[in-house]
Image 1 (cartoon, rainbow, N blue to C red):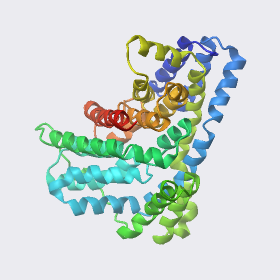
Image 2: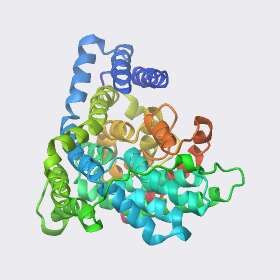
Image 3: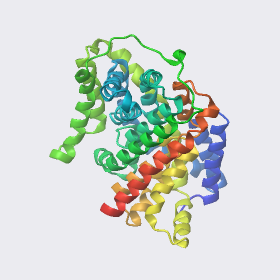
Image 4: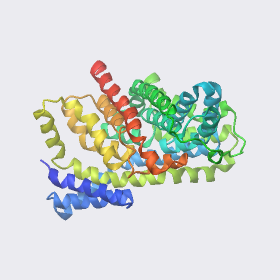
Length: 419
């Protein structure tokens, strides 16, 4: 039995979307949408508030892991490790493979635990400099970075992956590994599409004023890679040796390792403060997301969607990628979209016989299709990284959606083949 009607849950989500589009803070928008949706849905004020609090509480384990991941993200950025890894990849692959190098660099930076928007911002100065030399337009460079970031995001210990693994009750490392093949296909698609865009005659030229240089000394490559390598080893101990190291431990240990080997441990306080500032927004967003997810989860929405799929003679597993796509598009956020979709539909998908790990992977991949719409911060942060206007930035949305859709379709194919 459910506490809220489908109309109420849908109305609450719609209200949240409208408020986000009108530039209200996403967390407040989601909380207000949850409150109004619960009341419209017939739950009454007391039940609505109780459900919202319960939904927010279900986010706490994810929020804790995300907060500690800020230590790794802060360390990789502030020690120059992320920039060094990106520069090394681009330098080794050369100008001839510039777009592939840019995409691969962003993918790896994101995959080792840097948020996708920060990954693009980190690689952007390097991409613009090599784009100037190789005469590549901004559209092709930005698509390569976004596509690489999307590929890395579905195999990373980032907030969206953590939240999805929590909701489905699956191991984080297993979820990261599950989408490796879809990520590689997404990377190839990003390279192909960015190469296509590079040949456009009306592309935006990289100007000298677009190129910046920090001028700061960077660590050596092996120093830069030490922190991420420690994280990978610690997280891999569970599938390899049966030793479970929670991301709550592995991620900050990787960050501390990065500070130690780069000689920045004296800056521990400043770096951790910076890292926390980078994850605070996501953590608050997740709490707001939890409130609307709680209302939707306690509504008839999931049952009505299942009934609709059955009437259309569509298999139950289709719900997984579809939920990820729609919720991420609604919130313009991979993290919020994946979280709402997972919190809402995980029990239903598992009850319908879809393996939890496969369902989580499909939801997660689906959340990368239309997550970069203009009412979200990712759209503006990535456009700003290459000094691109909103109009020009919007023209890239169909191309980056193709990258996310490639990952999603491959995740579905992997389910159909391997289960």
